[in-house]
Amino acid sequence: MLFTLGGIAALIGDHSHVATGTTAYDTDAVPFIWSSPIWFPVLVGGATVILAELRLHFPALRDGVSARQAVAGVAAVVGLYVTTALVHDGPVVPVTALIAAGAVIVWCVLGDGPAAVCGAVIAVIGPAVEIALVHLDVFAYHPDADQLFGVGPFLVPLYFAFGVVAALLGELTVARRPVDARPVCDTVSRGSGAD
Image (cartoon, rainbow, N blue to C red; front, side, top):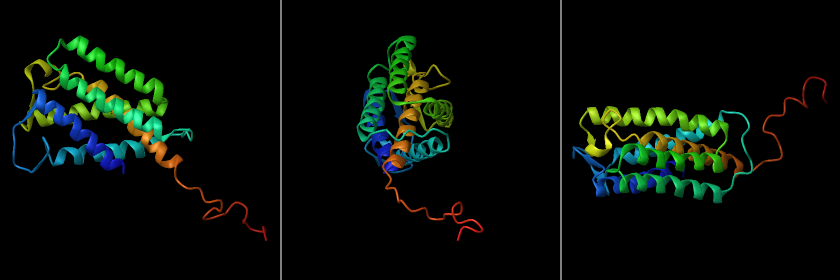
C-alpha cells in the first residue's frame, strides 16, 4: 500500500515537472509510465516504505494519527511537488522559501521530532541521488532550476516534507494494525515457578 501510494504520488509530480519543462529525461532506454521512466515510481515507492519503516524504529510512536491526516499529508506533498513545477523558472530564493514554508507547515501540523529526522535524512539523500542522475545524463533540470549542483534547490524542502509524511504513514500503518489481546510469546508471566 505505501509503496503504491508513493509511486502514484511520484508519477503525478514528475508528470508535472516534465509537462512544464522543469525536467527533461535524456533517455528512453527503459519503458515509461506516463511521463516517467519505470524506475522512478519504483524508487519513490521504495523510499516511502523505507522512511515509514525508519520512523517505526524511533521511540514515541503516536497512536492518534488518522487516515485523514495521512490524506492531508499526501495531498500537501503532491501540492508542493506540483507547485515546484509551476514556479520552477522563478527567482531561486522566493521559490525555495515558498516550498520550505510549505514543508515547515507540513511538519508543524503532521510531524514530530522523529518525523523531522526522517525528513532530514531524505532531504539529503533525495537531492544527492538526483544530482548523481543529472551528472549521469539521465535527466536535466531547466536552466532556471538547476542551481544546486544541477538540480532545483527547492528539492531539499520538498524531500523534507515527503519524509515527514512518509513517517506519518508508517505510524498510521502501525496504529491501524489489529491488536491481539493475547501475546504471542508470554515469557514474563510464565517464567520459572509461574505455574
